[in-house]
Image (cartoon, rainbow, N blue to C red; front, top):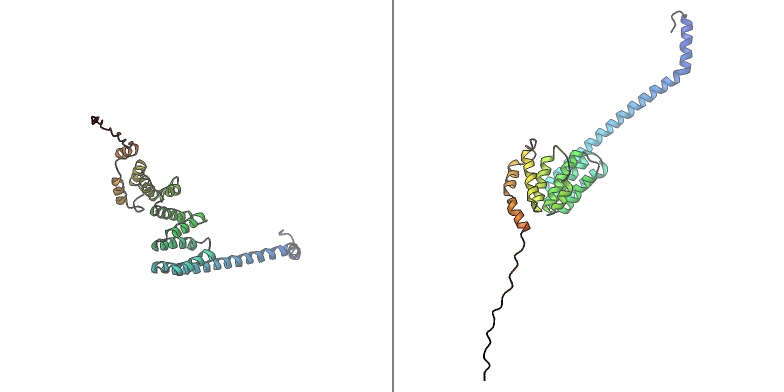
Length: 240
């Protein structure tokens, strides 16, 4: 503001400016206050939802530990419906898959883990689900499904786990060289310690049949029996 103006002129300029722009200032302040109130409300609601989801998940884990399948299914369904997209909904599927396996209901365990893989859950949770689903498929004797799940998957944190499971699947399919390579990759992985049982993997590698012997068994042609040669029958003299 020009310092040469009189006090009265300055006041008149302020009044004119306020008359023209005052509404925008008030509107901006109102919008800012409303945004702040809305953000605080959102944060409070989000925190409340997290607390409720956490309490439900704790209840679910208690049912899983107790082996109470029906009660666990009810709580897991609440988490899936009311808290979809949260970590509690994703974790509930992992917990239910474990409980289904404890109850020898492997098909439902596999279906639950597949639902988690098909969801928009966090990648870290999906890696856990993928590894557990691979173990279920091995239990079911479906080694080919394990290859479909794990081949080409790239994860530094789960690489050793995946390679061990692939080794198990290759062994089951008679692909001994591939199994040997998978187990060796685990044993040579510098970050495998703590994620897999290296001693168990070493025993698996030592338990593999010799590659040469396996190849000979696969390529050996079945022995063909020589046709029996009939002994000539001596002619007997015709009785007179």
